[in-house]
Image 1 (cartoon, rainbow, N blue to C red):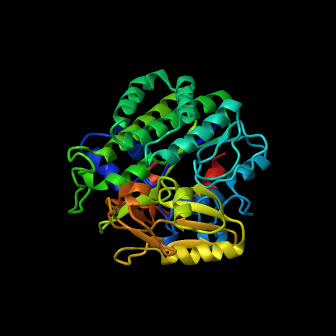
Image 2: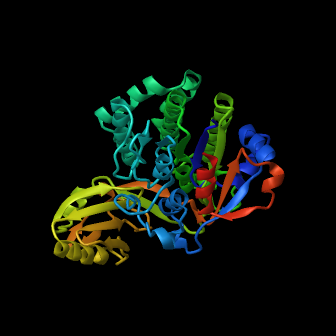
Image 3: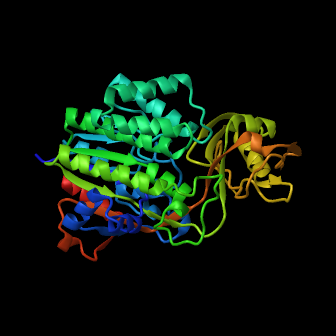
Amino acid sequence: MSRTIFLELNEINFDYVEHYIQQGRLPGFKALMEEHGVIETEAEQRYEELEPWIQWVTVHSGRAYRDHEIFRLGDIVGRPVPQFFEELESKGHTVGAISPMNAENRLQNAPYFVPDPWTPTEASGSPFVRRLARAVSEAVNANAHGRVGAGTLATVLAGLARFASPRHYGRYASLIARGLRHHWPRAMLLDLLLFDVHNALFRKHRPDLSVLFLNAGAHIQHHYFFNSPACEADRRNPDWYVEPEADPVYEIYELYDMMLRDVRQRFPESRLIVATGLRQVPYPEVTYYYRFTDHADFLQRAGIPGVTGVEPRMSRDFLVHFDSAESAAEAERLLRAATDDEERPLFEEADNRGTDMFVTLTYPHEITPGTTAHINGRTIEDLAAHTALVAIKNGHHHTTGYVIDTAETAASTRDRTIPLPELHDRIVGAV
């Protein structure tokens, strides 16, 4: 029986890939595109629905947003939205997954299921794989401020020792060394580790379908699009942010290119489907992204009532739990009224759900020492002491995505565009 690998390269822009191919680089992408072509996908039209945690649910369920109504990262948990993971298992197939975005683990006999770092669902697999899943989640959420706990670091290093492919030792060494100075090699290192974990588990368990989601490309495009020579925007990142000669976008594309060549060499009998869900394009305005270094501490300093817990989510987002609906309602009022000295709002997104609230630090301006926040009649003198820069926003989401399927030919895919929900049926039909 043939097996299928579904590689989810989140938000990669194939126009940029083509730019580097024209320069004689990215031979793995080039070979796949020339032999199997590229199908374009089309997602939602409303920009607020063009979030990856919405669109990957669309892929996994075969339902557009209006039908699945999963709007936030982590909301899939406990919701009656079917996914192809359990759908295929119910038909007698084995399914494994590494880090699928906004997916709930409902599998009964999964050889492995490692959730994405932000969705609160159980991992499946050996005790060590489950422990590594928790460590990866903690490391990803700590990446913005660079402080990773000793236990988390020890588990990630143990994961490297157990799963790292010897052929990638040189890459790991380089990424670890460069990650001491820059953020983007850390994201690349985690993707490389997830790739090696996936390959080791896929080779061992041979499931009928194996899903691997990789996010470093999306993360790096959001941060560093303007450093790419493929970018036609007239903006560039400031030198203090990243060296002008650096091209992190090419670096992650080259890593993915190696992965494509590696998968095809190691598992030539497997059908490979690569999809991006969406793509990113250059962002036209100067916008800063920050996240709190300690969300609970900030809420306490701000006097937000009734907080019983805080769960950091992706980038600027966090989920706050309250002791009552009344506390949540008061907190929403206070957060929406919070401003800086110029009366510019800090939190324009506060989604109150009764006793939980999904909050985004939407403040788009540069935070410098002395930037002051006013909230609940209190003044927080130095907002910079409580936040970490996530990014100067370089890229934003666009409805077009891409699919490469090794069951297709270049002729069969020429000028083809499909609605993104149809990708679900392609995956199910491949198994």
